[in-house]
Length: 487
Image 1 (tube, rainbow, N blue to C red):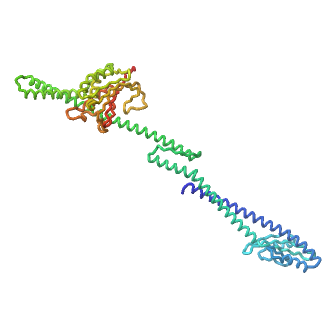
Image 2 (image 1 turned 180 degrees about the vertical axis):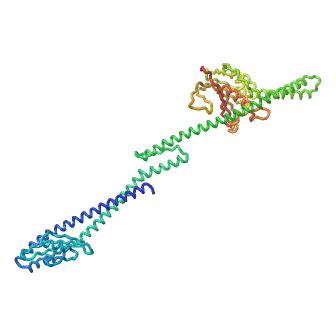
Image 3 (image 1 turned 90 degrees about the horizontal axis):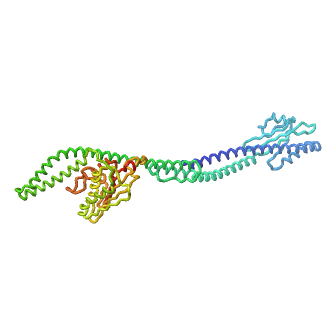
């Protein structure tokens, strides 16, 4: 049962109990007053009749006195009177005869009510008749009017109680629904939404009571849960990213060790093959077909040597030779070196620097390799008549992915951006873009080491690389390098 229904039933029960007690006390009080008034009237009437009867008795005799009494009793009213001589008895045997005898001897009066099918109220008073022995006047009056009054009072009280109960029930139900029922339903719905994970909606209880206070506390709880959920999501994402970076670093270490060993093992045989092929191409006695095949062997050997050099760069064990490098000059010179490659593919290269601060402490050769790898990838991904944008800007608020957002930053970063208008990459490709030997290029166009090498170099310099890409919209690589401590 709802709270409003319980309040209504409780209010009705309380009202009925109060009215019942009040009616009971009122009826009893009225009955007592009724009987007191009746006794007082009987005594007054008895004294008047006794005096009149005594005068007639003395003047005209007993017969005339009793005749007068009969005339007084001849009416059809509810009150009857009769004379009880000294040896007579009361009209009803239930009257206490001993008390009646005391009245006969002048000891006060007697009042008694007798209930039953025909309830009556009896009063007895002594009558002095000169030398005659004392008699008693008996006055009796029906109590049916009293019973009718009681019934009327009870019915009136019951009707009043019913009307009050209905009115109070309606008011209690209306107020209970408005003050308690509706707010409690809103609280229940809010609790269900919170349980289902919907923390965005807030309660608006325009009251000033405990229920409204509970609603405000529930809103505060929702806000705290929402903030905690947001922090949890952010922390989870940061942990996932950190785990991905850790796995990626472990793969780089493993691949780097393997690559280093393979590169050293293959370097000497490839030099021998390349040298012998070169000797054949220079032998005048060999035929054109032999020299042509030898040239092909030599070219492929050179290509294999370049791949081995990339593997060695990827697996480099030595520390970079760092010095103060002007990134603006480094980017401009790198673009000059790569412009012929871009022109061959009919792609424009554009460089723009928006910040005067561009110097970092780094290995210039390694940074140039990073820029070369990224720009060549951008040129190869770009369609004809498109532009590869290279930018340089300060990034004082930059932060490594997965780092604590509340942590203090001792210095800022400088950012190099490489943006192309190529085919872009999907989500699956973006997750593996820095993995060694992973490539989307055709066979013979790439080894899948360019971005892995760039990633490793930037990591060693204390920076990081981010990438944004959408299919058919191009890609944007951002290389963040830390500024010197003094800046």
